[in-house]
Length: 277
Image (tube, rainbow, N blue to C red; front, top):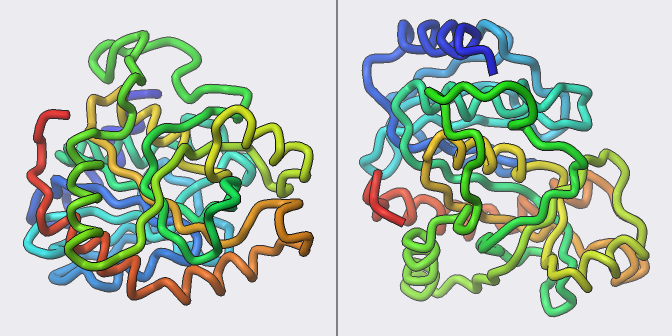
């Protein structure tokens, strides 16, 4: 990724804010409501930020919200960019590198996902323990800038074990049903076939979606700590023998809104930024 492009975006945003965010939030389809909880906020449309693409998907407002959440300084993406929108991987993941440039040390990634694990049900929250990259590409392909990260980043613990422990503790304290599992990322935009879902289950996936994996790869390249949560918005193809639609995704995320907000806000509140994995 061109460092000049990153710097231009970082400098533009820094001119608009007075505080330094240390936690980044990437909010998926129907989950942008969390950004409405941020106080003392500065809202910047993606269209205003140099080098940023625009978010074209229903349920993604397309703006950065920077301010305070549960006593922490945060920057939230209220809507993300997707590979299926036609953007190259460097643009899909540009906001992660910009967050790093702003001072973010920990990233919370959220998404709406289809349930592959047949013990799940629509409306469950799944804490992401690991991921599978089915995009057929990688955001780190191309020249590597050693100042941004090492050529071959370790993905052994892509999702922070420390934060996974915190998630389990918070769920228990708040009485929240919390699943754990592996998130598989496919390019989309078509939903998977029943045969593809059967394959994914065999190789160890618990949920499937069209985002998150590239962002997490880049976050780890930048040496940022990552915590991930999927909202199981529907059961994947072939499990319930019913058609899939984006409307169903938005409808389900709306139903679990309060549980999602409670969980993530408590994670942010108790998060010690910059802790060791």
